[in-house]
Image (tube, rainbow, N blue to C red; front, top):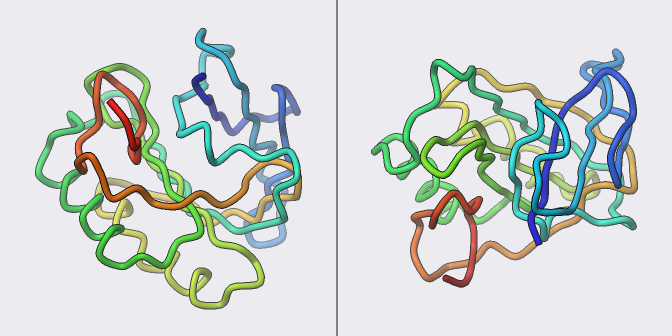
Length: 166
């Protein structure tokens, strides 16, 4: 099963939650489960992050413009993934992919009751790839997922990292 994620102006998808940025409305973070792209703006995400019973959280959301998306094997992308593994503080993390070759962005999730996770969002390694936003997300959308240590830090055929099987 594939997970999909998009920040939209209206609620849509199998799961959704209100997003705010500095106490201002930032739209809806929407998620779908399924193989086919459900919305033109939707990007693949590690499906394990999607949780109907997920708590309210804060995320760092990096969305790269279509013309500025590096290949997922670009050294800067690899270094960002390595930094996440080395740090180990986020509640959950996934790269976002729009096709099998390019990295379209990343989402890093911090649980609201974990100050060390909230603090870590200020130094999200994926911010080195492009601009990001810190968003507060309502409950019922995102959970926590263990960061896989294997098989490698590379993605496979467009599957969002981290992914623990071939």
